[in-house]
Image (cartoon, rainbow, N blue to C red):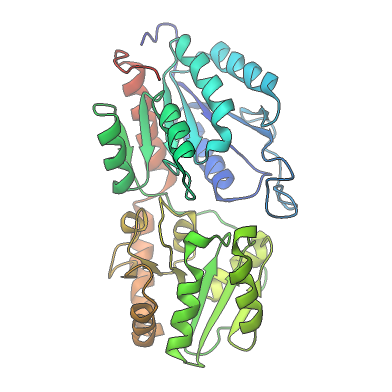
Length: 382
């Protein structure tokens, strides 16, 4: 692709605050890190999900702030194709060396496909930053749409070896950058302190979805039967988790604390600060912003041995693994963990954070953008 007349601008496409969720926070941090070292403009959503699709009360964080200025344009309306066209025209006018799209669900397929086709027709390469290659709740039609979208990419950013291998098999020769999600070093600290409980205080944090394996953790705690082990579950539940929510309500009491709603930043910080460890019993995972958030608070992770968690957790240094879907193994691990051992792991987390920040990640994204900008277009469009 020709890059004549272009500077070093990178166009980012994806959610930003005040929209809720880890991907919006991810987008903000990547934007800030790229802006610190070069030039970046983000094209964000002015409307992300329609009301009927979002599981909670709203996809807007009531405490979040719109990013005014600083090269952020809230131009994409998920339900208005005219906004997709105008966004594509605005990116073309910017003449970036590459456009980096955050990709995680086929809901964005119509908008992102239209934008990508327009950019490529004008010689602007497209990088897909894949939080998921295909949706967690996949199907044949989702696979088909995802493959069509992935086929338009000139390069990829992934957070797991699993996704790298999958893309290498499907699209041999295309450049792929693989790195764990950088640690969230700037999350707000809590304005109040929660006292630790028992011998272990555990936290499960984030949206409740079936693939996150919360029932495995609950089974493990029942098998453990230790009244000195406490668990906090914090996050909004999607409709497909109604059975798990009913179970949580039945178990709620002395050793189980529930916050089954959107968790504002101040409370989230207090919960992470109180926890001895964060538990991720996922059945599958492409990557996890929860791990990055746990590391921000120097909290070790107890995680199932799946997907991107294998790349984000260093066993014996920042956390420990157990086999997915195995509550007995998890119960055994919890029975042998104590605060002394977790303090050792916390020191490993602090060391890990020092070399896995956003500036290093942004530098690698910038190098990939330069690579695809100066490479001949050898990839068939599909």
